[in-house]
Image (cartoon, rainbow, N blue to C red; front, top):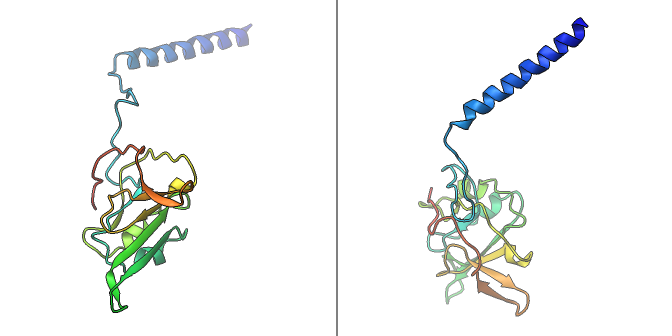
Length: 169
């Protein structure tokens, strides 16, 4: 009988502790975010989707050598005499292979960085081919995606970004 009463008292005490916690939290302000209309801005050190600026790039290839998953490729522009120029002809990044480690950003010698991690965290791709992005001089920050229907690169139209211009580090 003694064990039964101690069990009942302990269950009653634990129920009171749970109710007390509920009562304390009941009067705190709500922190719910209405997701589709409101978005949480991540912390500044957050590593989201890599972004690329073709105007700042000097085509040194340091990001290609630093990438452990081999998801970056680039080609130098060539002058009319056949000499390499410190500008890119094209730059590709495969988001499907990228592990968002940040080594490409650390190895970039330009100021401001030509490749950096933006604060975007909700990238959606319809196909595997859309994950491969290509930049040429004059393209916007999000590049162009490959379209298998016509075998061409087209501008990305249906992707929504957290901010228009990502934070430069």
